[in-house]
Image (cartoon, rainbow, N blue to C red; front, side, top):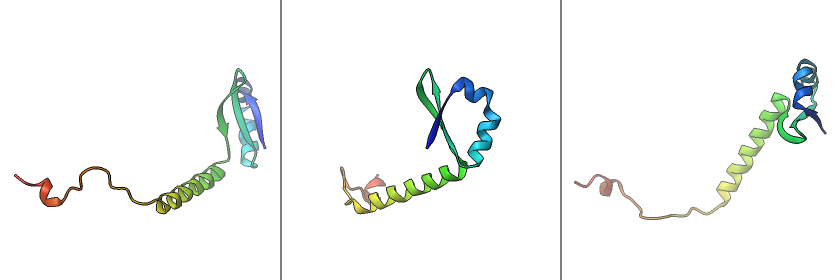
Length: 80
């Protein structure tokens, strides 16, 4: 569960927020009530990024290859 924190409060209590993030908590920083940033543990962020990359690669592998435009050959590129 993410905890909302205002930008001013995050600025005042940054050290405490970092300690909580080390323990696994996450925060959404808001500015005038609008979410503008997320503070998450670094290892969790890396895991999410790795999982997103795996999901993207699986999706790309499942899609058929589409040839768009002219098929160039090496010879046609270097014709004088």
